[in-house]
Length: 141
View (tube, rainbow, N blue to C red):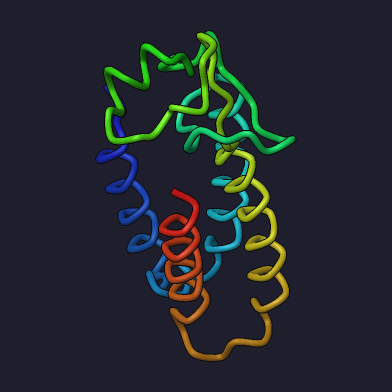
């Protein structure tokens, strides 16, 4: 059975067999990690999971069939610390954080893609990816 731990091992074996530098490979894939994250978060939006806090903003969305559904009862059971007093109906609208993160992922891809030939220190591009994606995740989540 192929799982992610086996895949990581295969990547390392491939890098060693081809006498590649792990840090350089990390720099090569950094823009594509950001792109993949952006695409993956669209999938989260389509499924209705990993959404944000309740919101009354015009672009707020609801996921009545989400995982879990954005209902008053689910928020009171699973997220009792979240204030839902403004919502009286059964369905709550929430921030589409999946789309915020998807947009950020596409922006980070463009940034990293433009920086890839300008950075001379090995590992720097991957390091930039780790920093900006971590900061983005902290603020959006």
